[in-house]
Length: 501
Image 1 (cartoon, helix red, strand yellow):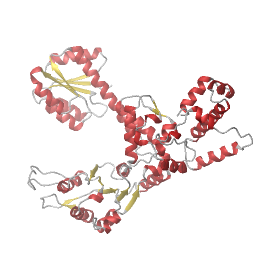
Image 2: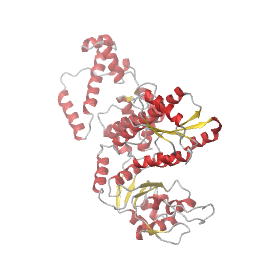
Image 3: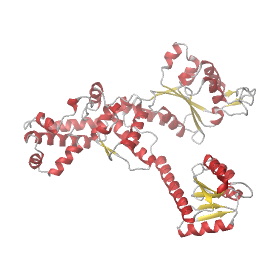
């Protein structure tokens, strides 16, 4: 484990903390002033820096608050505990505003101080694990053929600096594609800057993009670098480009044409070494016809076009995405990941998702917080997820073997076991069910599904149990005996397969 750095000009404070932390098997390194700490930080690598920093607030050669600000600039995730006297409560407030993990009032109770430091260590270690997992997680997920086309396009563009236009509905993941294009490009070591042109007022957008000189307008107290300068050597992602004001479109066209721009109020041309990736959910060709978007700018941006499919066009990806987002939400909240039943997945798969992947991610985050049990069932899903009959029919065309529950409002879609057993068809001894099973398995395999075993096993078990219940007029124990399984097994299977609905 990396050491805890202690910064205090009082030798007795350093000695007491060092000995107490040593007893807790926590390594330490001590400093007498802020300048020593900053020099040590510059000289140390990622594996040699501090686990946490504990600093006094009043020291010769620089205050703890100044040290906090400088440390947070270069190491924003490092927990910093500020030690302060009771008379320095204003400084404690400033410490929190500067991003301190906690403040420790002097004179402090040693056991409480050690408890606070240990809590900071645990938080730091949890953040490190989360960062490692996020780094190891895939940038984008998708097995649907439409998404595979997107992945192939990103691969082909990996060694190119060409301008790219990404189209797709809101929430479909356009920024993720832009980030992937940047990460796999020759500019990967440069900065990726994203800006939503629709979210910034027209009056401020020009300054946001190109920066401004001091005194360029009322309130411009200092010179400000715009997004183009911030993205120098990297990639600038312009989201919702279709909403850009017409006069700004002219300035953007000039940058794309000759690679130069001027800050607002400036007179010196600035060279822009930036790759531009644009995105929109609008029909830009129609915007051009309507006179709302410059045709020459459209052609400048539309060198390579990537269309991102809506989530309803890649329904087979929903089960994988849902489980991924549940895992991700659990990590963010520091809780045990929840599992989702196949019946609940089927309900999600049938839903239209007007908000696309972003809506699915939000629902999974909601479920992580609100679902009462570790296993998410259809009844735990938010009411708006109930698919319409048309959506149920649509998903059966795409995923024909998936058992999709109809909307909760449809009472006929939620039969009791007795009703299901009474209406289940009897056995068909002469049916060539093995050939049918083979054909259905082949269809799923050809369509690229990776859960064929689960899908067909669930259907097989459901049909066996319903047929047995039909034969015994809904008596579970007798049905279990005839099937050769235990009564606990049939009860568990009925719950797992969602046959009680």
